[in-house]
Image (cartoon, rainbow, N blue to C red; front, side, top):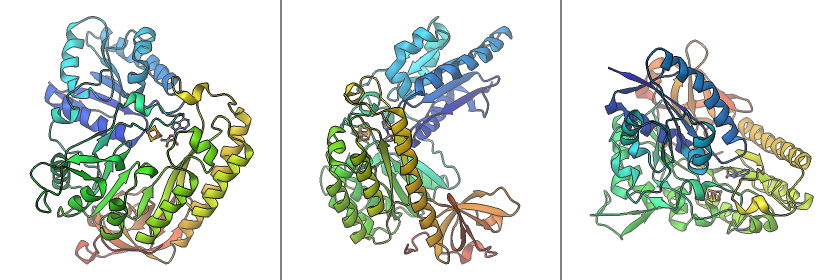
Length: 467
Ligand code: 5AD
Ligand code: SF4
């Protein structure tokens, strides 16, 4: 009999990918995805630990779920309650202690062992805890299913991080850097294409640290070496028929190499949009963050990317109020934003993460200063975002129409720059890439002139657009 599974996903796109894979792994055991925890036979919280309050949020969610579990028990049934992801990895013991009614706690590297954990959880009393970093890769033990939503899909090609930025928990929760072999990535991409994906976003905590093993050559002919970097992998992927758009996230500036920049120059399927976190514009702060690049190197890198692909748009992450950050340091972040110009960016107040070096650094910044700096920085970023969106008006942009909009006859798609584009268009255009004339803009989205063409009249996503 079918059992229902509810997964709540927090945090990054990697977690979204992992949740889909967990759904795939549990399907042969009879679990079907459900959109509500009510009455579910299994509930998994796939958690994120990157910033503060993550653990507290998980505990309060568990408190609510406990009632659902008890209601199920009163009806003579069982609900398996699980905590997965980075909070589980970092605070597994604490979860077991504070929420003993949880059945399974497991980290991001062990979800291929889920069937075994479920069997143990059904047999034994007490919690099943699995926060190892196993020698075998979870990727070798996953079913070959493909999860595609709205013609777009994620594909994890790399995991883990060896950079140890002093503020960050990722190297502790996700483990060391690991790249999936090229053939495996290409196979998964073809399966995603077969399942309807026209756009694939390559994922990795440090996606451009990718160096996948090549066995027996690649689609592009004889093997050129034992490993391939991200630039080469992108060229291989672009050759797969039917994959019209490629993206990758998240990149580490110091590891953007020439091959990747050249891929931006040469591969039209690679979208001209890059999320390249810089964190701060102050060299003093960057050094205290252990970032391995200074602001000058970041600016140079942006220049080289723009030389290779003049229409490239940039996004970034910023942290304000890192320990020891002065007003002058903060102003250097503002200067860098003004100089470079971002299409959008994420910004955060520094939040001390237990066990990371920055948490015990002196000169922690007052909360009020963090709030003030964050507000100023976000105001500047929003101004740039609004400005960029406005500059799109009058241009034709290739848009991948992904889903129905809120209004009758409306479709919503994505521009090469990830802007949402709303348009009145026939439903049979869903899943195709159409060239749209932008006629309106807001802070977060664009609108385009209505179209009534048939899909055969549409242009391919390879069409380029100058910003
Ligand atoms: N405090 C604030 N922001 C953080 N990030 C990571 N760790 C912290 C922290 N301790 C931000 C960084 C990173 C993004 C994913 O989250 O900007 O790039
Ligand atoms: Fe965290 Fe730095 Fe690694 Fe990014 S590069 S995951 S910020 S340690």
